[in-house]
Image 1 (cartoon, rainbow, N blue to C red):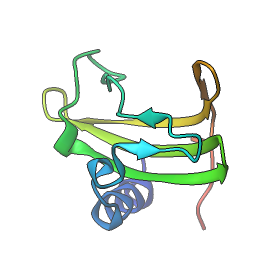
Image 2 (cartoon, one colour):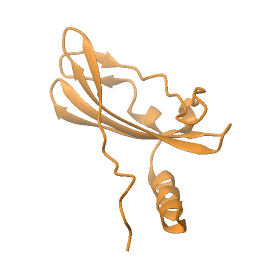
Image 3 (cartoon, rainbow, N blue to C red):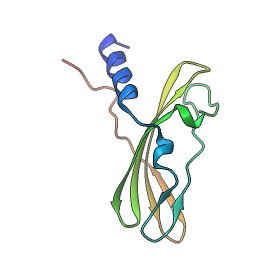
Length: 106
């Protein structure tokens, strides 16, 4: 991985707030999203809540976007978590790809 990408990821991490600041998230229909079991993409171990940074943004009264970055101390890697959460009769969590790992930087 290039130094530019590493520097960008470090800046992104430093600028982000802990995801816990947004939890629990309450939808307008009173449904509550409390969080998720974040697992490292490298070693599949749990990522501690204070190593999850990101945000939750409303998209509609029953829908939100959760975008976060998890840092795994065990294997020194970063895992991205991007979901659209819909609060209907049952909560639906859909994984979305918001990041393009093949992006080129000038």
